Length: 264
Length: 222
Image 1 (tube, each protein chain N blue to C red):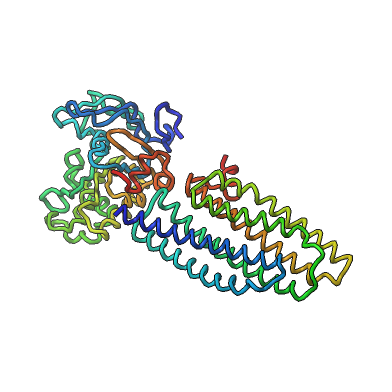
Image 2 (image 1 turned 30 degrees about the vertical axis):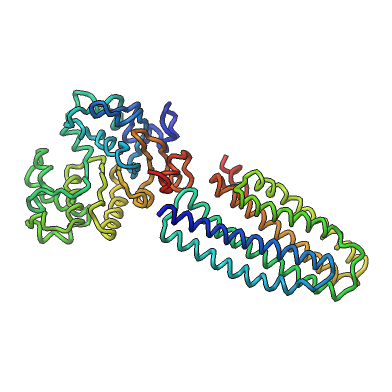
């Protein structure tokens, strides 16, 4: 348990945490979207955030790589530290931050380019030499289980792939720039149950090397796939604990009410 | 959907409450036959055994169906797991009632003992434990469940006292051995009923509070 004041029974100690959030508040104009959030995200583990629509879970996720910065009227106060370094400060280089903390979206969004170019795009932008690109593409597609299927079709337009392959490709595209944290915002909501199960399997493999934070409406997915789980409600982090605790004996009655479907 | 699921849980609990009432009746009847030296109620106990076995299967099927279809979590999950475990305990209590009848049938082949040692007192205690464990389940009453747990040691003490008393009788008068052995088995049956009542009480505490008090688990964790 964390000893930091105000942190909700965090299962992670500050020493093990990849991301440390303290006294985080956020607003969209006058709407108070995040209220005094304190938590530690474990390194090389899967943390899920659950809660009803509008509870702030996606807003929190987007704070971790400052994706909200472009939203008009958005304002944030408090502290988020990645490996101890502040990421909310003015001097933070956003391109570098987003290379370290990548995002997978609800709907797969490959570029209308070839499979190869989708994966090579990021490393090329970050200055990787052409000679290494083929190696990076193979490694990144291999990590998501796509290489064997697509190695002979690297020139094929990515938009012609199945939705599951497109989502895997988007994850490969992230891995190509060697991130440390993967943010996933409802990554399986556009996929069928078989594809969902495969992406969840992939997440289990990826957590050996990456810190994963997933936002999901699917509570079964949170219970199956995550190690730690946070329940958010009206901008507050109500409870944060080991996932089995949240789904067998949650401490807060609001968590209990939400996970059992009594309200929310 | 939530209401539909709550109705399923309520129906499951109603079946379990009925099963508890049947088990309590079986134990009551078997003890009465023992104390009255009569086999008149044995058929009734055997008939109830069929009913309790059928309820055991029905409750397990209901729980498995709910687990598969509703994916219950938190209190709902604990209540359903409790239901299937309590159904198992009640089925075994029914078995013990049958065993008491069979041991009584053995006793009836011999002249009555001058005194039944502490068996009437032990039977009162065990029936009280069973009644309170079922009441604790019905009311989700953790305090009452704890009272049942506290009484289990007394049931064990009774069994030991009865065993040593009858052992002494057998050593001084070998003619009483068959009768004494049957009484020792009855004490053992009653002690098992107390254990099952204790298990029911432990399940109630887990279902209501999420605390696992079995095998001093909480003490070990602290």
